[in-house]
Length: 372
Image 1 (spheres, rainbow, N blue to C red):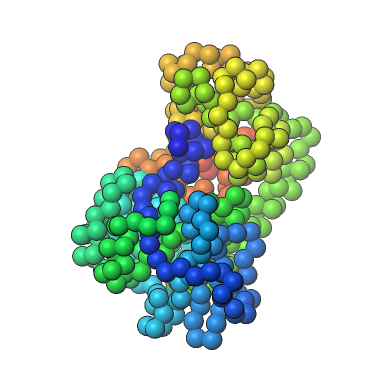
Image 2: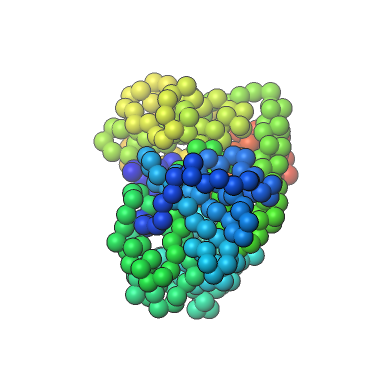
């Protein structure tokens, strides 16, 4: 992982935890899909309704996984008794989901709470309702077991983890959440339906997602009215003279395509990031109209202190550099990392506002700011 914005977005989704839980092949699950559990854009999970319980199937729990994890939801005879009243989540990306469902009060523990930027959940933290469970990649299992959550939602980079095994042996179920592995903005946002299932709020989750989806699709139509298609540069130098930027099939590139923009590396292969020489980036991107998401930098001065060749780019000279990592909560948490996966409609509108301002004259930026 690098510290470029694109890759930093991913690493902040997966900083913490690896899980061990029950496995079950998807083709062994035979049930009729309940209409309220229709999945449209996400590829990493399924929810199926059976007679007395619901099955949550995580199809892509970790990178390159060849197994699926299945959890039964329902009464006391299920893996997870629902609705959940006390939960621990391990990513700031889940905070907006809890708040949209009106379930933030069920959060009782979180690792490295300073990264949470939401004012509503910060209020719960400040008033002692949410326990600190550790810092960075460590999780304080002693504190977690003491507060006795009914469910832990974590991440996995592989099949097993001693920390999560300890939690499960204590009788606390762990769900592996693979939302960060989705390859489209709407696919990531649709994971709100997983939380809808564990809170018995299926219809509410479906309604929220449909609103986000409608807003996103409407934004695409607005962008289609643009009479020009500005060229886009992204990323920055991360080590020596190697520049990291989104690949042409990545979700970031999808945002740029949906905003009716000409991302200069749109034809490159791959769903992650590219690592290219500075010379090749300068040759192709020197005259790009806009520079979107310039890595971890917070100012043009900081960029020049890192590498004075950044000044050779047209977007740098014309003050057309925009970053989503400048808006932070009172304890330093970046709003974009927390809210963007759940609200891709706002990300897309931000990009349209920046590059086609005449199309959204009354819209104010949610995440991005011009770099000074």
